[in-house]
Amino acid sequence: MHVIQKLFLAACLIFFISSTAAAQLSNIDLEEVNEKRIAINSTGMLVLGGWALSNLAVGGIGMTQTSGSTKYFHQMNAAWNSINLAIAGFGYYGLRNQSADMSLSETLREFHNFEKILLFNAGLDVGYMAIGGYLWERGIRTNDKRLIGYGQSMILQGGFLFVFDAVLYFISRSESSYLVKALDGLQFSGNTVSVRFSF
Image (tube, rainbow, N blue to C red; front, side):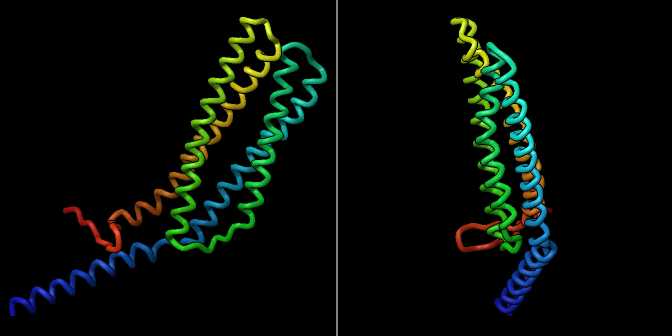
């Protein structure tokens, strides 16, 4: 009888665990989560594209109307943002064609990969600003207007991209944490799933 009671209690516990996991997962509308994720990332690409177009316009005019370091500043802004525009265009196009019908693992993977890219880019942005500072300082020492202008431009562009990547990362992170919190009680290890309870 003692063994039967233990088996019964174990069966009840397994049922409770599976019911808890199912309830947590059923409250998540993955399609809605993915639609919001795609919308946020698409807005980010539109912001980047808008920044790129404004820099191309101002830089294109500025480098023909100015001279000295200011001319090179505008020249680098225009060149830099031709690349930004291409990234924004391809990114936006890819997102517009992305399906919101994804599994939980696919959704989490999309969030995770995107956030890793943003953190990596933020590190690059700091590097761009550091290189810009070096070029600016070297330009002053050697009286090279081109290096001064290019350095100032790289500091501006790196600074914008750092803020852009950081803001987009924290927005994405707040959305992905919604899924993580819903799964907070579930623990995955190898081929097993367990539920953690706090008393």
